[in-house]
Amino acid sequence: MVMSLRGAKLLAAVASLSGVFFMAGCPNPPPTPDMAAVDLMMGGDDMTMPPADMTMSSCDPATGSCDMSMPLGDMAKPPGDMATTGDMATTGDMATTGDMATTGDMATTGDMAINPDMPRPDMATTPDMTVPSDMTGGAGAIGDPCTADSVCKKGPTPTCWKSNVLNNPMNPATPGGYCSSECTSDAACGAGARCVSLGAKSYCLASCNNATTCRKPGYACSYYDTAGVCFPDTIFDCNTKVATCNEAGTGKMGGCVRQAYEDKGTCAASCTAGVGTCASIGSTKRQCVYLDATRPPNSDAWKGLICLESPATAVMPGGACSYLNDCTDGYECDGASSTCRQLCVKGGTPACTMGMCADAFGTPATGPGLCR
Image (cartoon, rainbow, N blue to C red):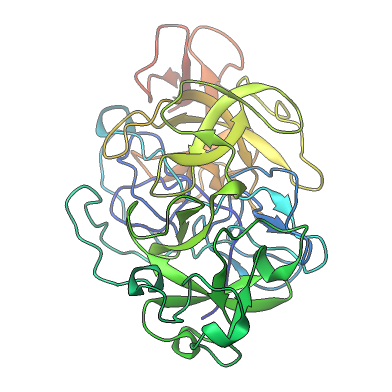
């Protein structure tokens, strides 16, 4: 199945590599099939685009392609109170950030896949079992360096992206050139490559599942499906190990939401709990959720309320959910019960319409919680 490079969701439970945004209280698995969280490339061949919110939905209603990054699969989650389990804070949406100017929604990071329940490999110790083309030493495989189409040998129509993705100067630069090809399935790309939707068409990209496989400098292993793909790292705008950043376009202070195995991601604005506290970015609606990315295995810097993309179809209060941002605005997926619960502030506002504001995230006495 061809998935797109587009947004991501945060998974609420622990056991899978598929969501972009993981629920508070669970360890953060690396990639997520649905790269939905950040519209990496939206719009068209022109990949220069405004940074979108990394938390998006898994499938792009406009093109029909699934959001690779963030989510979509059913991520098995561990029972237990998220307050003590660990935040699945991470996410992978292929961070992009831009509008592909003529091609369609590059699904960013596409919803890079989002989601089947798959056991998460240990990024610290698990070797990359797939040898991406970047490691073949310039043999013309997908992702190898090139200067002309004749250098590239793999895929139905081998093409060299000599200086920019899709050879469009408005798209991210491709240092050293990048061998690709149009495709309709992973099989068409050959071993070590994936067929990824980049707007109106799909193209072969080198596959990866760690921070060392893709060529450096210039490329990063961007979350896609259950692993990742090598893509220009200019689609990311922040370092996940830095405490704060400024959201592109708005300039608001926020945190870096991880979108790649390398410590790279997209900056999203901080917010206050409640309905309507996050401004939309273009046509992308967002909502405020609590995200703790400081827990293993990534141990990133952000911990707090942050704006993530709202789901295409929101889960109503009390409904079953899998990702932090699965629920309707003002609610968040509770990792302890996998249900949508109202986001509240202990001893403050918003107060719970039902139940009590519980310390679901291990925050201070006046910090955010969930109504239980």
